[in-house]
Length: 523
Ligand code: NAD
Image (cartoon, rainbow, N blue to C red; front, side):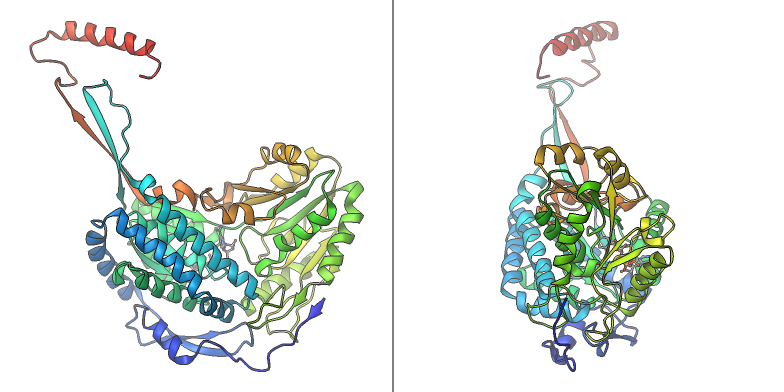
């Protein structure tokens, strides 16, 4: 592996004055703060104000007041704000990437992926919201007599709770359709990565969304996140399956809706006939983007037994030439893990697998010479089912290789376990599509790792089984924030028939009408 020089000290391109400007956007009256530490050096670089349940209460009060007027704005005005946001994201990308890298330690190219995804989302909902939100006209019971208008009514104030791994785009991409549909938002970003979210929220205001439409609170997950769950009209949660279950319980208690984007143990299947070099290059991006701290990244690789050695050689040759490092330039292929906690979790998983008999083909060690929480891209084989990482999500730069006998066995192995977020299949498209139809995952990428579905924001994305409930992106991504309201207009005759007509006669008339309608193909 090529290791790039570690920076001596933290020469942060984001100055103290700028950080102070951003933290003023947090709703906080507690007078308490938390030290933000950068994975680039492990040093503290800012004090971030923290919120408590009273701040959450105030955030909801303001968001509710703002929602009433925001819901009255025209779709054209919302479209303008979304498209302006798209332009601002691209114009300000350098600072946004600096902030994301400062907080997460990910490579610049991975940080660029966040800007890109968010810009795509803003453009998509900007262009589509008219079609998605304008009233539609389903059939009335008797053509000509009953007409229906189906309206999409905003839910109110949406609570968003987001994690640290994609702190820019996952902070905002779910909230943009919520705003577009006429809701306002109270948001708790993860404690590790508040500035990325705040920088994006600042852009929302500049783009033309009302200043109070997006409230940010920060603090302890169960306390501040819990206070959001107790107040929101709808909750959008992204994070671990364990926390997602708690959020779902809170939502069930209050009978409000929620969408949950949770964990995964995503499989990639290399089919017989696949180009092994292309598949190995694809695996590199699928396994090690954002150092594997990506909900849709691949942690299990299934390869035909007869191609196992050749594929393994292709993969290892590429892993060995990856450039590793932290810093604000574009050179490193892979950056750091986000925190000591994450480094401990990844090390524990790999050490446990080795203790159970797994073989390390590449990596398997931390790299404190590069950064305090750096871990090498790691490839394992012979991982037994008793190892924790066999079925449990590692959420780090670790992938296990497994040979399979035939495609049926590959599908069975890929579908094993409790998750169902993403899968990747490499090989001839016709065969790969047939395999995709048998995979229990919300997204399947053919001849790609995850980016095909992730970046195609017109396509819904989310998990089956323990990987979540509901979908982000596409029509489903915006309709989840609306209640459908059916308005029926009755003309000429009441549905129960004219008052002057005997019931039996009317029943006969309705029966005849139903028989005619049954024969009318479009009724
Ligand atoms: P986490 O569940 O610990 O935390 C996520 C968020 O929930 C944080 O903001 C946290 O402060 C908050 N939180 C914690 N406890 C809470 C509670 N009791 N009530 C309300 N909020 C609470 O997850 P994490 O470890 O920070 O993130 C990594 C996990 O997120 C991984 O499992 C990963 O797969 C998943 N993830 C999924 C997606 C997706 O789209 N499916 C995207 C990114 C991350």
